[in-house]
Length: 246
Image (tube, rainbow, N blue to C red):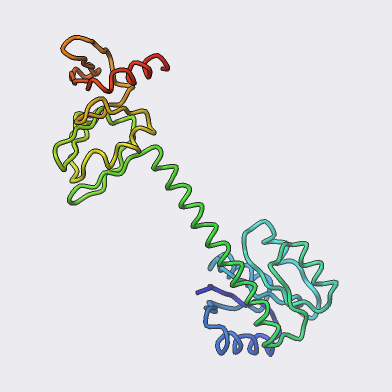
């Protein structure tokens, strides 16, 4: 629903538009109305509506006080103009659209269809922004799903990961271990993009935590918290190349 308010001091027009909204525009929820400039501004600030239906005339004369007061705010406004000149003036205050009086069902339908399209585009943009923000968060954090929780873990807090058949163990800087019911290969690509390396079929390590590499005992790395892990023969050359590039 589009939360809407109606502002104008012509009682006959206000009742007519209220009836149109009730009978023909189910997507609009008319939350309130006001007959004056001060009461109009009060209801705008109180309800913060999605849409304002605003008359151009108060006490018999054209008045842009409300538009001037809300110019820098993101209120979508449809302006009921007495003339093209008034409409052009209103457009300078960034109204969404205008209707030249007299207001009719057909004119209102045409403008409301534009409002619907505008709001859909805006919603799509918001969803896209949320999606991009989520992607950004995912680049900084890994989501680990255990039986009863979702854990959002910063990559830099993960020291190493260990395969355990169809389970995976994630060892964190805090000393905590998180076990998830998924094979380690399901996380390998995401981890590699964040500076991890699979040194063995059972181990993926955060390169930032490797302290030493020794060739003895078939090749081993020691991590900064003391863990010693084997390096598979087929991984040694790639690991050494990574060391040289760091």
